[in-house]
Length: 196
Image (cartoon, rainbow, N blue to C red; front, side):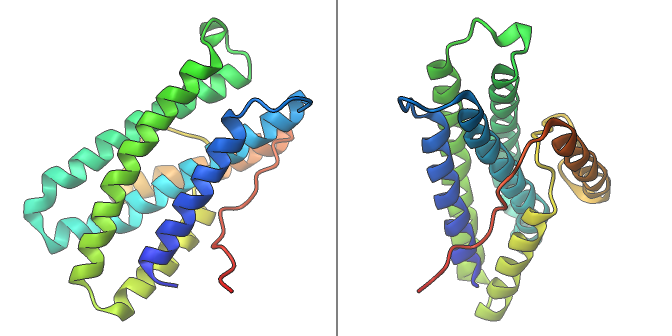
C-alpha cells in the first residue's frame, strides 16, 4: 500500500472516530461513549507517532531547508497531543477538567487535528513527489506497522525524535498496553481500510 493511501486511510479513520466520539447520540450508554473516545484517542496517538518516527526524519534528509516544516509539524503534533490529554482527562473525570464543556474540548481537538492533517498532507505530497514509487510503498508499510506498535495514549512531554524518542516511546507503548488492560480499555487497531 502506498504512503498516500496509508496516510489517507488513517486520516479517514481518525475523522470517523472523532465524529463518533464527539457526537451526542441519544440512548448511547456511558461505556459506549468511553469506547468511542478511547478508539479515537488511541488511533490519533498511534498515527501521529508513526508519522513523526518514520516520515519526519526522511523529510529532513531529503530537504534540509524543510527543517522549519518538520519543526512546525512537531509543534502542531504536540499541541494535538495536549488536547488529547485534556479529552482523556475529561472522560475519566479528572478534577481540573470537570468544568470544561465537552463541546469546547472537541472543538479544541478538531482545530489541532486539522492543523496536523494539513501539514501531514503537505509532507506526504513532498515525499511522494520526491521518492520513487517503490520507496513510497515501503514507507506506507512502515507507517502502518509503526502505528500498530505505538503508544495508545498521548504523551506530549516525551521526546518525539531521534533514538531517545524511539526508545522512550517503545517503553511507553508497552506501559500503555498494561494500563489499557488494567482499565479494561478495548482499543480498535488502526488498520488499513479494505480496498475493493
